[in-house]
Amino acid sequence: MRPNIILHGGAGRWSHSKYADKAREAVMKCTEKGMNTLRNNGSAVDAVVEAVKCMEDSGYLNAGVGSVLDFMGGRSLDAGVMDGATGRIGAVASVTATRNPVVLARIVMEKTDHHIIGGKGADLLAFLNGLPPLPPPPPHVWERYQEAVRKLLEGKPEIYKRITCFLEDYGFIKKIIEKTLDVGDTVGAVAVDSHGRLAAAVSTGGVILKFPGRIGDSPIPGAGFYASEYTACSATGIGEKIMECMTCKYLDTMYRETKDLVAAAEKTLEYVNKAVGENTMGFIAIDKNGEIVWAYNTEAMLIGYYEGNNIKALIKPTRAH
Image 1 (cartoon, helix red, strand yellow):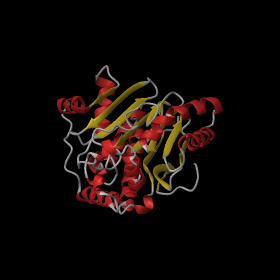
Image 2: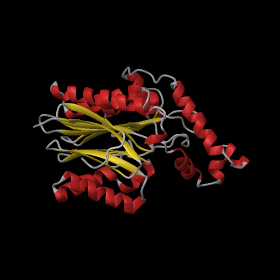
Image 3: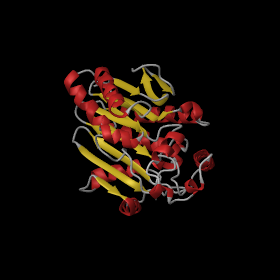
């Protein structure tokens, strides 16, 4: 089998990002790290976890060190891993004490009888396994938070300056998303190894200015990530919309029907657009033959992949691959 990997660094309005170049450089570096893992006889799970861990450590992507802040200035991180060869799943939600939730998700998959562990329990599991703590947010993350707050409050009445607005205006979360979706909310990787085994991994800091405790699609198998003996997929965008579509599971179903990854991706994007509308998400996928694909309905999507022996890291691909 020909091992292969593809990464994403989020879908959204990348033209608004001050750190797009640094994010692209990080994805290029992490794509190489994931592929080197495969070339050194690592498994697909090894490759996607290493690639996503690398993106969490970059500080310029919305995962791990670079995770965005919630409405109160805190951080809660989500991640998931799935092994297509065995069907095993591991995910964590509302993690606050470790810099690499994707590593913690793998621990859930391999060392516990559970699929998803959240909150204080996830933080305790990270501590018991000696995972490094989550450092303070980098300065540019604080700057983005302050900019988002200012943008949100422009021209708004006093009610929007109080936390009680969440109770008094049920459309508040939607307004946050509409005003602050500058870039996507997730990083992810999918891979196939030399034995034909598939795996998917995903990690995120969630939506900027989210209500504390909000959990998106990233720890939900079938939504933000999925792997089977046929495909592996990772999605990015507005988590609530991805969960409504169960995007990655839908793609796997379409692949089983069409036996064609590009056709499956096209059908999935068509379904997404009809179900939840445009400017909502993107996804990457790989099949058991090593073919890769990406699709999105946002302005752009950051992806990293190999073309021959050359790494490509693009912020605005022009077509499905």
